[in-house]
Amino acid sequence: MNYEIGKIKGPKNISGWLCGQFFPEESGLKTGQLEVKYATMLPGETEPEHYHPTGEEMLIIIEGKMRVILDGKEHVLQGGDFVFQRSGTHETLAEVLEPTTYVAIRTPSVPDNKVVVD
Image (cartoon, rainbow, N blue to C red):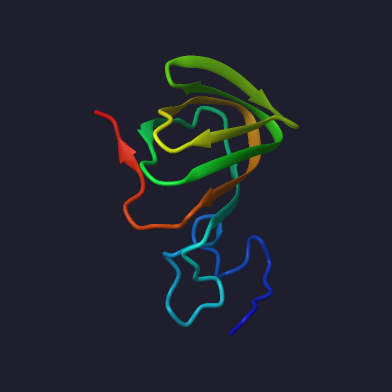
């Protein structure tokens, strides 16, 4: 299949991911070229320090507010902000401060491309 149409929050959605290498072979959403995620996080949610050894990532904040740490420097991101990260950037979602809807785009989409820092 060369295309697929769906709802952002539809049943084929895998935790907010809209496309990527992790979809089944028969899915029109399977691609190794990029990953796209559309999701909302709630206040208090966090994510540990990690980095992606391959590729680049764009995070676009649609609405809300979150505190992140990028390569050791703290930033508060809110609706209308974006972050572009090259491979190897250490990132930590320190805390979601307000319900936050975002889009994440990562290229390429490769297996095991998230390394959590102990």
